Amino acid sequence: MSRDTLAAPAEHLLEVRHSRFLVRAAPADSADAAMAHVRAVAVPEATHNCWAWRIGAEYRSSDDGEPAGTAGRPILAAIDGQGFDRVAVVVTRWFGGIKLGAGGLVRAYGGAAAECLRLAPRAPLIEETELILRAGFDDLGSVHQALALHDADKLEEAFDAAGARFRLRLPADRVEALRRHLRDATRDRVRIDAPA
Image 1 (cartoon, helix red, strand yellow):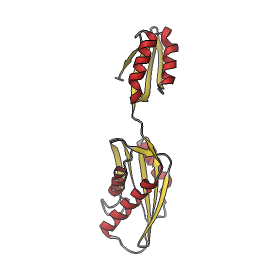
Image 2 (cartoon, helix red, strand yellow):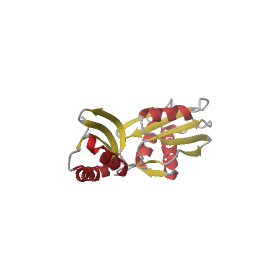
Image 3 (cartoon, one colour):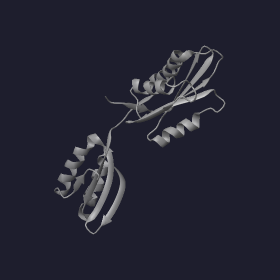
Image 4 (cartoon, rainbow, N blue to C red):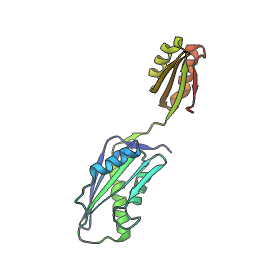
């Protein structure tokens, strides 16, 4: 199943029995970025700042003082249920004087997060892969032209007596086209391997 991330940060406000739930969601490409979003939007004077994030197989959530399992997990379930990845969601609650009960909290936190994400601008995630490319000096012009043509980012570049070694990141669906291009342009002198 292909997943999306957020094209831009999103907000949604929900009131449930006088409690206000403000959702703030943002794209996050690392655990550090997700936690930075949590710290940036948490409101210290609010009753609770509950959150969840997912980045690939990695995820975390927090109930921030609400009964266990009533806030963070429903927010994470909303992220997954709406088909998002690389997203951090914070739901800030201001208590309105009426207790909602465990079921009411699950519905309020999960529902507010799901509605925010449902309305948010989406951007498809492009699966990327990393490769190691080795080329002699005579082929560097062809290599640089091919990297630009196939949207490859140079993460590292090193030179030795034999030529250059590059660590690259590029869309996974471009790898075979890059291999063919370089094979044809360099008479198969360039080596491309998965990173060790």
